[in-house]
Image 1 (cartoon, rainbow, N blue to C red):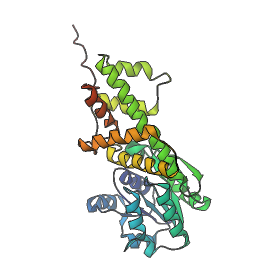
Image 2: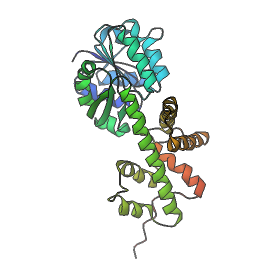
Image 3: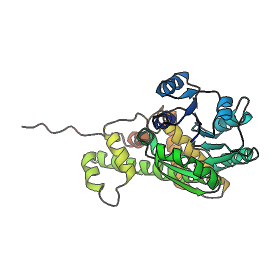
Image 4: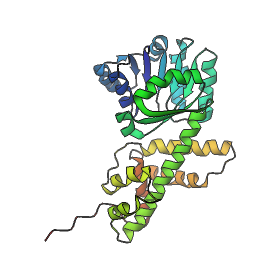
Length: 301
């Protein structure tokens, strides 16, 4: 592996970049937050501008808040594309729309640069532990060049298909994850309002057909009222909006996701955008005037 670039050192990007440095990757990093850049430099990375990353790196990874920022970093004034070399691979791990991914693919292809859209699943814990799942779209040679980096940052990667396929897969992932959190929330609000101990309900159903990775990941945090992100509601709000826009462009009705977006919009209005998406439960709690929380242990006599 040659020198790699990494742009975007947020909740996900920082631990991903740290894992690359710990594995011995020669890494040049950039972020608008100078403090987090300094933190990565202390770990062994080198700081660089977008132009310097374009000029000096054979593989360039990005994980940024939205597609508009991705395109500005790549193609704006002082952007990566001003100095990028033919043969470079750009891997965008942000959650964006397939249309946005295709724009990047086509613009970079004109420069002889491969573009892989490769959003991730696994949240902050997966980023820290190096167990992320990567869903990739693009050409096989670019994907193969990314494999050593995927193996450091994650536990699985799949080339789903052509450009945009990774972004489509992430949208499908977000439909399932966020709607499942909403349904889990609705179910446990019912249980709590009826007076049942939500922890006992969880223990009773988790081994059956209602059990899921989402249930196991979120219910223990919900009952302990731990809504520090993981995956912020703000990011999932953006992703579900991307789901709806993409689905409408393809004439695919998404009634559950449309309702979910209104739930997320309500949570936005009430100041919950920086909560973990397990905090979706707060919408249902407000409707029923009850909290899904761990019940006090009985006093031993």
